[in-house]
Image 1 (cartoon, one colour):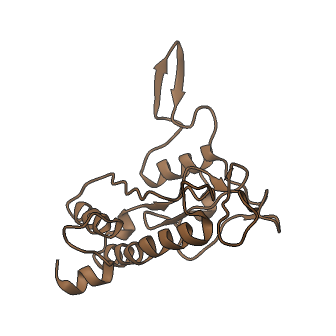
Image 2 (image 1 turned 90 degrees about the vertical axis):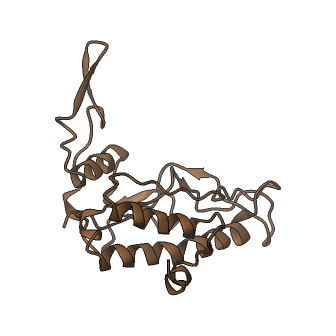
Length: 191
């Protein structure tokens, strides 16, 4: 890659990094690879002696991912690939809205939280520039437009051109589908 592209992504050749992975993901998308997963470690900010906590760890992870992710999205859009590429950014659960660990300003964390969490999606048939859903003032419970995980899965499958109600497999005498017997496409976020 030219130096200006490496700089835009924040990538350093020969160094393992999320930025380099974003460049590889762009190249894979350009070559028609259908599913690409990028993973970045270190988000487990519980504030324990093992991790760095929210004040340090979360800030570092954001710096390591924001720039290359923005560069990847811009390149996909510039190449006409974003309209056919569904980008999903998220974790496996939310984080509590309150502190965990020691009661100090330097090192605290947030525990796992399944009641409310955020992801973002871009391209691949998703409406741009919108927010769907909200939490209460404390960030504890979903308040408006809750999306169940089965609904999220149904929506992702819809964007990939798969009808989640028709894609079934037989197991132990019963027809199963990827969203079990649940799930509805969240049409409000579909472009």
